[in-house]
Image (cartoon, rainbow, N blue to C red):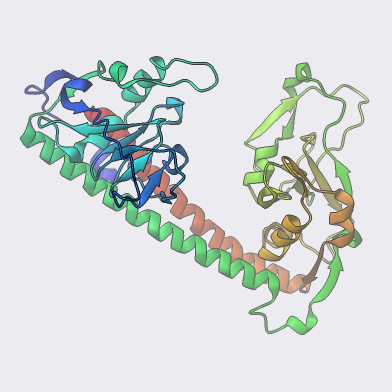
Length: 398
């Protein structure tokens, strides 16, 4: 697919005609007073539409108490009119009812339904929708404003050709996503088996440890105000820890550190943990410093564990161990809070227990998991490239 877009696509637009969106698309405004009686099975809210995804995959089953009445049909595009900057516009493969914060698009005779999701999912359309949205915290855009969006419409024969090309590209992307998901699932299974000793023939040599026996805890930045951030020394932000099992020092922010100021500098082998989150599932996400760095610090919403030595736990092994199923279950169980969840450093130090293989076996496991991790990353990069190429093509056409 890359070869298709390595050079700019040559499209003859001499016969294309300028049109307004409302001349080729309309809002059906159909409703269901009794969804149960009408046999409706799918209910779609804004949360079910994925950003920048032309496929509508999610819905809820019908509940008699639902307040949604707006109907949509197979082939319609459901557009998130609230907070258009989220770029939500997906084509339905089933009938149902949806939220009032969703505008239903349906094509007129002069535009093929197969082309509609691509007309909508381009940067110019979303930028137009954002510009014409009104409201404060939850800006909304009306169909009557979107109806004035102008673009070039190809004749029907070219519409069919373009639709065939774009859906063929989408099919490739969908196959890549399935393969990516399978590899991620297999990787997680291997990760769990490796760090739990499930497939080890040396399990009798594994020993029990408590995290606090292996290292001491330390906190993140203290005493900082808003004006201190933006320039100065690098620090690892919350999302870096949350997202990466290995700290990515290309994704750091900056903070002013004065001479003589007492702050904890990060060093190779440090284990970083998120100390708070919005959900218990996300608490205690870990990231390990695997680079030899100096003069870098940790954000105030995380804390760290500094290993006393590497005689019992390799930092490279800790990277996988602390993202394994057993540790994640521990973190979930010990999350404290109701609207915002926190994790106690003392609890983690004193109660987090695990079996550790010998250092030699840790090296062997790390080598295997590093290889698999690179394969997963390769699948991710390939899928991201394909999505980028698809977006580029859509923007070229429309």
